[in-house]
Image (cartoon, rainbow, N blue to C red):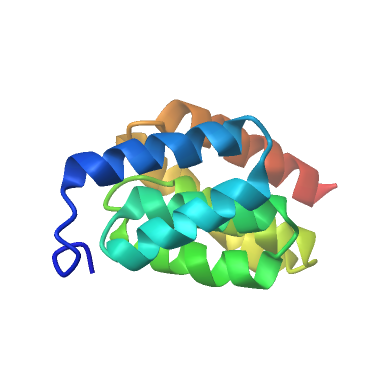
Length: 132
């Protein structure tokens, strides 16, 4: 879509910064709309789908978030953020076994990811919570 509209990556990067800032300031509905637009423009960017999925999660749209994060995970490479988001969704909808599998996958994959230490710590904390 971005090629059809002749949109440069630098323009998408600027839009992403706005979406990210809205998300971080708790304006999840606004960020959801912007991330959705970015996903329509470029369906190959992990960060756009991760942002969309996390915004859906924050708005308690867990089924949609799961589908979005699953797609993002396919684009993730070594990043474990989408898996962590999926685990949180599974926990919210009381699917403990799937949550546990996703968290174990986070522990495995996060060893090589950019945010690995943060994701590993969160996954361990969530696994402890599941075990209770």
